[in-house]
Length: 392
Image (tube, rainbow, N blue to C red; front, side, top):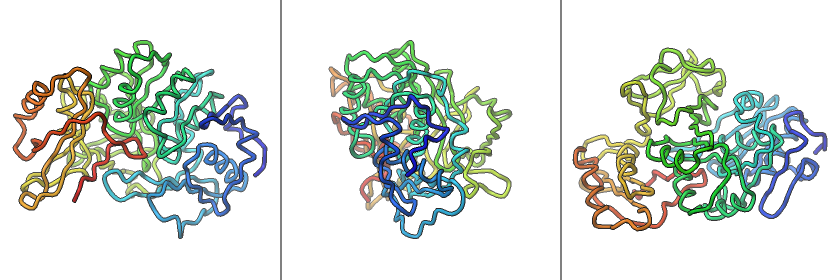
């Protein structure tokens, strides 16, 4: 590919990929696969492929292994096709204009930042972090491996490079806090995305990193980056339903959040420009709170139950560092819920079990986990999320 540096790449940008350090000259020298399909497992290759696609005026597919790339065609113009993670359902493929992807970059003015990449490089969130670091002339620290590498390896890299900016899913942050232990990090920015941020986690992060700018971002592969909430509270202000920021329109239809955004992928919206996000929401006072995914609802004895809503109950219990609620097949009820709990160090198991049972005692019987298992960690997908696909 050409070695000319694109105008969206700051000359001071540097990439740490494992033990290798790349400037733009080294990235530009990487061989890029023909045909526009790039297996997005290395940030350096993703950036090289983007630059090559722009130079040739064609599209690029950042393949994550969730769908067969055969049959994809780049089309006309510089576009980026992303694949969703398929955490709760069938992966989807959405095409975005590159200029739109760059239109909502945040943190670009943070010169001298040292970013840690915790997301899959081919994910929407991972691409946003990379493009933000590239535009700011920041140092981007990455760890090779499945997804963005193991949590322990990410924590080690964060210590070694004294990272200042970290963006990750709430599930990542819970595990990352445990992996860090008592290590101090000079964080200036703490960002959450990809899953709903719960209040106990936001409170823990604010206490652990009191000098950091704390925000949670709402975005999706289909809609792009929509809005950021920076008041350290879960959900978003209810008055945004009347007047949302940044040219957005928000509404609730059948308990599901719908958005209208100039940054949404054209093929994902209805004729009036509205996109159903699939996120269940509830208006409570001056907030709109997220209550799980529509496609995550399961049938337990004829009752529709959200495992994520039950999970948030458990996460609010003192002594719980992390939790995962899954639906497993049952020949009698169709499904039943099970919960895996990661206790904080020193928590007494019997007392914690009693507290967990009490936390769900007022829920319908179908929404109460039938089994509680204790573990030292919760496995995460390559997207940094808890898999909602239990045994069938």
